[in-house]
Length: 298
View (cartoon, rainbow, N blue to C red):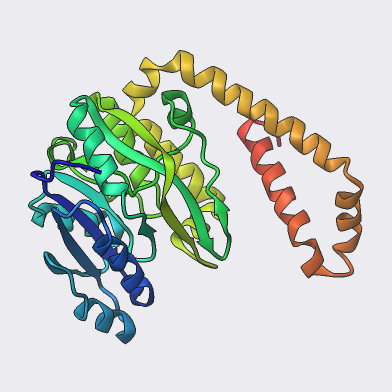
């Protein structure tokens, strides 16, 4: 596969106590068919010796190791990008990895299409859960409803500079969603490579699971997202409003069907006998109550 490798790609890798996974992530970069790469590892206040040692022992042809004081993924990525010499940026978390052709294919799309500002691919999951990461294909309508672009996507450093980098307001996650909305609002087009080239690790407990389990945190995060991108949502109201109504109606009818399921009724009875068995039922109740609050019912 031929390519033009005059443009440097800076891979930005925050690491907070993920040293046990670091070698796999770095090895996936060493296998890239695109060779004009630099790797910036940001040790974001790791306090586990295994992680500290892993960062100190990384070997890569062009490597910078930076240190931040547990500022979180947004702050760590921003610090790495400030120090990056690449025209293109690819964030890659220390516990994930990519296929050998990902960067080459993404760079080619970016070089051939000046209006494209975000290139990503399809993905799968491994670890606690395996299989294809079943995200919707990219469309503006889908992205306005919820984030369909993971953080390991290629973008230009100059675009990062123009929008002010990753916002550090988002303590519960979704800073990547905010970042993509900012680039889209700026006029960047999005291309999804129709291949599984990114592999996302699922851990028993992570920032994502904590975010998903916090109703108040979720509400607050989406409120901030809307306030920060109000002009984008208002401009595309005809796309966004019918879609959110459709999804809301789907959820309501799914819950109605679920509530009539005899297995659910069994769980309802089992709650008093075996709390562990009723975990899924409890989760269903929480979802149902969230939907009711969302539509204004008590």
